[in-house]
Length: 81
Image 1 (cartoon, one colour):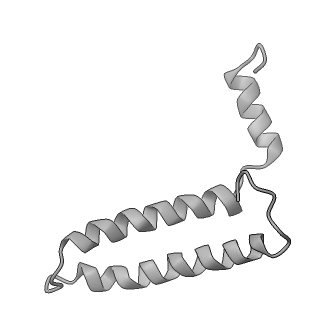
Image 2 (image 1 turned 60 degrees about the vertical axis):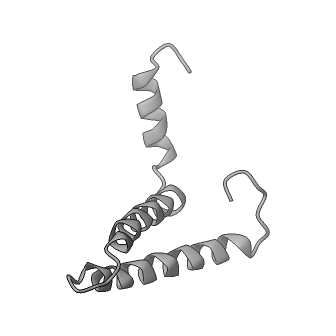
């Protein structure tokens, strides 16, 4: 999605797929958090997965406005990029 030229359908498929993966992973998390859940290693894996999915959501769907990005670049690199 980042480097490819997606078809007209791919961006919406990506958004829906990512949204549902995030929801389902968050839904499973409380079950794995139960003290009696047999596989304790799954909890750490789920927490890492939720973090990755949330970062992906931010990257694709909560982008920084272009003007704000330009302001940060100009402050960080006052002599140009």
